[in-house]
Image 1 (cartoon, rainbow, N blue to C red):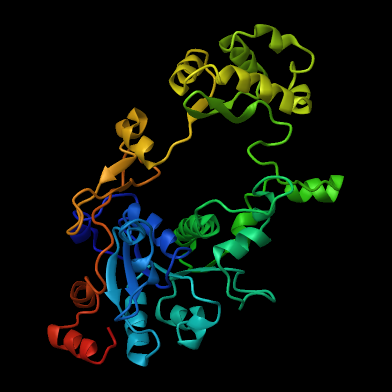
Image 2 (cartoon, helix red, strand yellow; image 1 turned 90 degrees about the vertical axis):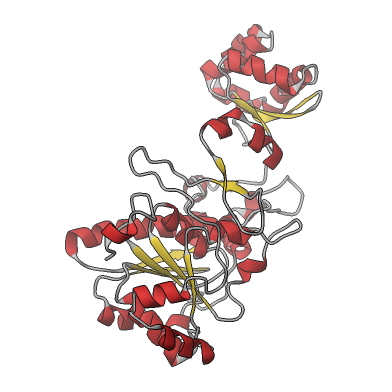
Amino acid sequence: MIDKVTEEKERKGPLTHLRVIELGQLIAGPFCGQLLADMGADVIKVEPPGKGDPMRDWGRGDFPLWWTICARNKRCISANLRVPEGQDLIKRLVKEADILLENFRPGTMEKWGLGYDELLKINPKLIMVRVSGFGQTGPYATRAGYASVGEAMGGMRYLSGYPGQKTCRTALSIGDSLAATFACVGALAAIEHRNQTGEGQVVDSAIYESVLNIMEATIPEYTISNYVRERSGSVLPNVAPSNVYDCKDGSFIIGANQDTVFRRLCEAIGRPELASDERYATHTARGKYQDELDDIINEWTLTKTMAEVDELMIENGVPAGRVYRAPEMLEDPQFIARDAIVDVPHPNWKNLKMQNVFPKFSKTPGEIRWAGAELGAHNEEVYNEILGMNADEIAALKDKDVI
């Protein structure tokens, strides 16, 4: 729906022909919008006037920097969705959009007169992507749902941590990011369906189901074998050797659980006889003697520095690597060679770096055009360009706190 002649000079990627209206806030919806914007879509982020998305204040360190990433490449406008004038602006924007993305609690959009049935009357080809804690249907649909709850009910939290200890989480909002990623996949599949049929549809992505869908064989393991996986710390039970090992100067990951790779590891550590030892010769045997095997490898790594282990693993074709933080990522030649982390101009910070657009495309690469913008930064541009509003009309909306 976008005039590519006028827009393509500003945006790159395979989705430059799409326009997305992003409603909602925090992570689960906006990360989906970030992925679409990274791939070239014209993502127009709508925020409440005066305060904006709470993500503007999230982050650690001296400054709230998360916003610079999650709102990158998006045109930021404001509109009060709780008043008729603001709702009318969204309806007018929807008429010129391909996708509407929202992550409010189910029922909120309908309360504002912005449910899919209403929007479909305006744009029959519209795809509505809805991200929520429990989905749009079922007895839990209207419950509030954050990533932590979705991770717990989806099964991830039960398996996180060490045996006999309280379940833990990684220091990231994995459930939100998973729901957003599945939402993005669903949006692109819905676009393909529309290309074939001309029909729009609703994409319903729930946090708990997004987590459930990466839970491997935990469900059939229980229903067929009455087996329930338990917390296992830094290892996967019966997958060995694959663990974190101690070196003189830090920790190192080695994954050599495949038979051929294990043989190469045995050569690397100077213990070729282990590969033919009946306790370690097969995948099943190594799983049975997992702790014993880890102790043997750890005794060897303790005699080496991480650099020495790294060199030997590379020479012998054994998957291995250091446990990185941001400082190590910035210095690693693989990250540098692939531009995995890039500099992004910003008026407030001269050294703003962030992860680059991913995945990479050989013919239609996306790019980071700008970091997250100020609240309402694109009001005049969007309302004039898409809705044809003049300066006086925009000023009047601002005076009434509609934008």
